[in-house]
Length: 87
Image (tube, rainbow, N blue to C red; front, side, top):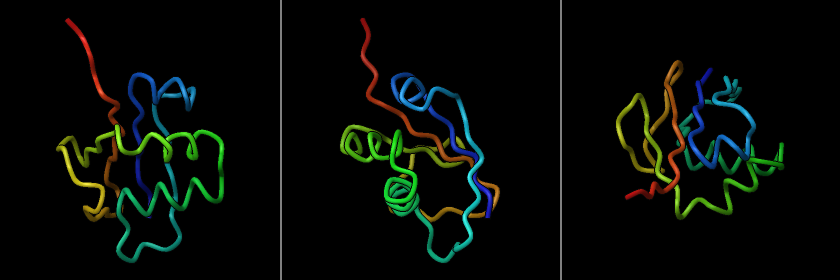
């Protein structure tokens, strides 16, 4: 299962890229929450930093705001959206 992961604003700075294609070998009941937990424990680095900021981050699946427990499917686009401020 391949998922296109997009990073925005401060999260993009943490990962030092706009997007990654991640290949998940197990796809049963995959959610953004499980994907993040899996990568933060195996790859550490920016994934672990993102896990620590999770309470402040929203997710979107295929350009629609979603819940952390929403299902992911092969070919989906997952975006991590940090809080946005402005004036």
